Length: 109
Image (tube, rainbow, N blue to C red; front, side, top):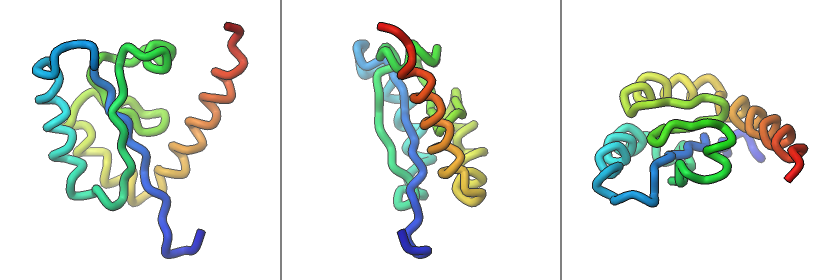
């Protein structure tokens, strides 16, 4: 990767997808209002807060996950996202996920 190519920050938005969209659409709208100015610098995914991954991490039903950080609101994301983007948080987030999955993969099923 050249010095001009910057890895995008991975942002996961967790909502209870098995419920009516009306239950979580406002939360997602607020999150995207914060994310839109940074859309070229991030990679996002919307995930189900009832998934095994979310349950294993004991995530709340509405949250934003960036690496090891769990943010409960769009206002918290608004406060922390610029710093995460400018301080190389993406590398730390990747390392945190790698550590998490390495530990998680050792669990017996």
